[in-house]
Image 1 (tube, protein in one colour):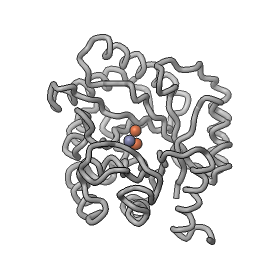
Image 2 (tube, helix red, strand yellow):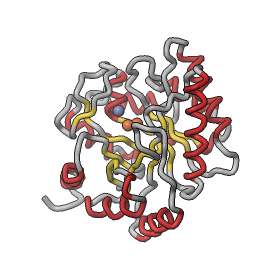
Image 3 (cartoon, protein in one colour):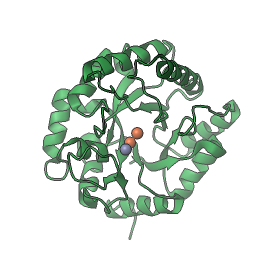
Length: 279
Ligand code: FE
Ligand code: FE
Ligand code: ZN
């Protein structure tokens, strides 16, 4: 099982790998740049190479690079669109140094133009920005449906996936808090939700899992993450998700409100509950 958490890239790539090992993780996620700004530090190829060597030696799962939250690929405002284009272009140049890393992004907000128009804008932008010779899989994240967020329903995700120019290089990141907030009943009907996902999108399209509890009840569309077992979903539900045979093998990333010791504690809790280590 590939289990890890979100880490900060600010002190370098190899550092993240070492940090992950220290937390008991064998996978992790990082932002491609500081989430508050659009500027990214220059990437050191030798630092990335050192990380990839380490993760290979230690048998890590597929790492996840997360696009900045500020990116709105669905906007028609020329400035926002230009910024999104620049960020994607720059991120794709960096990702070329780490071809197996998954690139996860939120599919944007339609800002009142309607879901269809927003999704078309997002996919047009992505198709234009993604270089034909890139290998990195693109993941669209399941969203809580806060405001005019796209990707709230499985149907919207299926629609967007079908529009990507390389069908085999696009998938979904399944965020438990978001799916719950979006209105799917993971607590009482995990089987039903997964069946629905399989029918609409296809379970094989799920390439990563964001494991978060939610501060709010189902269908709240709030997107407020909670620590495992400290939210409305509960540890039992989250354990059922990650031990579901149909979801096996995906990198599981914690995005819970934690510092590093907090993450280490949650990773340990999951391993103990799953019987992977003695309590
Ligand atoms: Fe996300
Ligand atoms: Fe997430
Ligand atoms: Zn979230």
